[in-house]
Length: 92
Image (cartoon, rainbow, N blue to C red; front, side, top):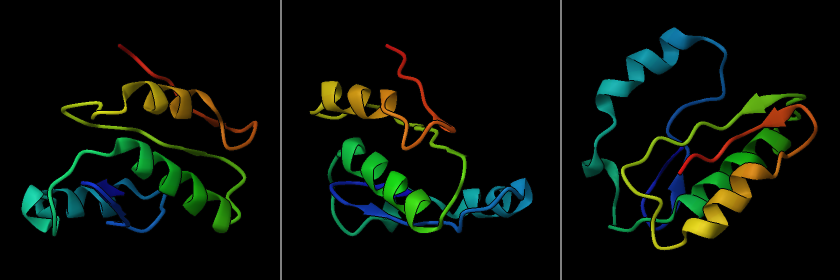
């Protein structure tokens, strides 16, 4: 999942690290059609994606240079597992 003011699915859900590793060099800020900083929306979309695929477990890892303008909602979202098997943390 990549995001600006809206999230976009950038890679398929996979356990194969090589798939993600191959895609990483292509991920740049130039891919985003608009500017913005809404990690909260990206986390929500990632959670929904996991649910739609019927994943019994999963991890959402947020890599960001900023928590955006909505820091508290982001931390709350990260602390709420989609289900018992999906865990996340929020560091300050």
